[in-house]
Amino acid sequence: MTGIADEDRVLIFDTTLRDGEQSPGATMTHEEKLEIAELLDEMGVDIIEAGFPIASEGDFRAVTEIARRTRNAVICGLARANFRDIDRCWEAVRHARRPRIHTFIGTSPLHRAIPNLDMDQMAERIHDTVTHARNLCDNVQWSPMDATRTEPDYLCRVVEIAIRAGATTINIPDTVGYTYPRESAELIRMLRARVPGADTVIFATHCHNDLGMATANALAAVEAGARQIECTINGLGERAGNTALEEVVMAMKVRHDILPYRTGIDTTKIINISRRVSAVSGFPVQFNKAIVGKNAFAHESGIHQDGMLKNAQTFEIMRPEDVGLKETSLVMGKHSGRAALRAKLSDLGYELADNQLNDVFVRFKALADRKKEVYDDDLIALMRDSAATGAADRLQVKFLRVICGTEAPQSADLILSIDGVDQQVTAQGDGPVDAAFNAVKKLFPHRARLQLYQVHAVTEGTDAQATVSVRMEEEGRIVTGQAADTDTVVASLKAYVNALNRLVVRREKTAPGGDRREVSYRDMA
Ligand code: KIV
Ligand code: ZN
Image (cartoon, rainbow, N blue to C red):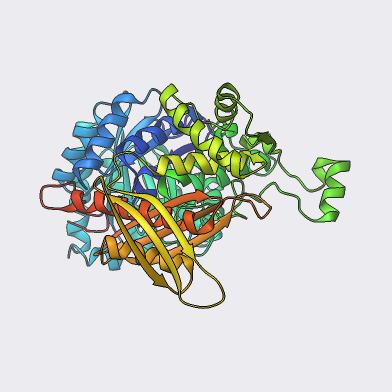
């Protein structure tokens, strides 16, 4: 098999559903994973890493279903370097039109110490496991985890073994986000020059963003001959995340003069998928995030606006429509009808069934009653809010009234429905949000710790909606909750309750017999 059929074509390998989803708190439901996989396929991603099948029943089911449904992309599953993982992975991906097994082992001195293998034993393990994977599937990717901190001679040795054993893609991970662009390029160049058989495989680059260099490192690797970039939407991923898909793709498009490479990505789908991933993962996108941040195309200062009016290229290196951003417009008011709402939502990337539209329409009317002008961003916040709450939720907010002012303490009267039974309480706190959260705790005692509480105004004006994100942790389970409302305290309460509902689901899944995540890819077997 030839490694690089088309010299200029860079394959995009998306791992939002595997490396991204393993980010603490970013857990997605089964349906959400299927939806994201479909959007990735539609936007032209070449390879979708759909999960880590041995990790849990949920991961296995998701990878299997994505493999069955996906029309174009290669569907890949992750497996550690043992036969059990690889067999389980194959069981899930084999349903795909184009399956791939991705197997890996940590090769740096620190990682070799975990399974307690010496260099020769590890080399043998790599030979055996890649051979096993290749006997099952003719598309096998192999990764030496922590490659950038592996001794170069040993790295060359194990890459050669993997190639001889039948790997078709060799991925070079910068697992801890340690490398620098020049080094990233040199590593790929060295492997291509020194390893026999290197010209028969595709080299991939997989970078983490701990030092903020993931995009630069991935592009440097491409310049040195890597032809697959592993990345995630919004750069989602553990710690500081992975290479952001939108950044590498747009860099190659906008700076085609110095990065003369092509991808198969339809860039006009970027904004929509970015919003969906943010909504389902509960990870807000930083306002000034490149390409997909709320301010990425905003021209706030007077000088900029003046320049923009004369010639958009004065301060713009890409057009908003290139990434699928439509001009923010005044949407509708309280007299707008159902058909207009459906059309607007469809424009924003939300296709709704009739019953969903009815529910959203009621919420839209309530919002339009409270807020004179409803903008695109308001509708997006409303859609996220609708997605976050459901009739099946165990906890539902029925009523809240807070009394606040300059004199502490503040107090909250709350009615919360728990398993269908309304319960009422009054609680005090240091501020109205604290009082509301204390009221919830009185009615639904729990030991979850609030790790993050974030409020953003969706639009300008004092009647703007607030979106609130909270992250909570209980015995290692991390969940996020989101909500939007024109009242910041109500939005905070709803986000808190949303996180608790997710926690209840997680508790059930991790109870004995539930969908426990048995292993992490960090646990080496
Ligand atoms: O960062 C990493 O090393 C990984 C591997 C499993 C490829 O995600
Ligand atoms: Zn990774």
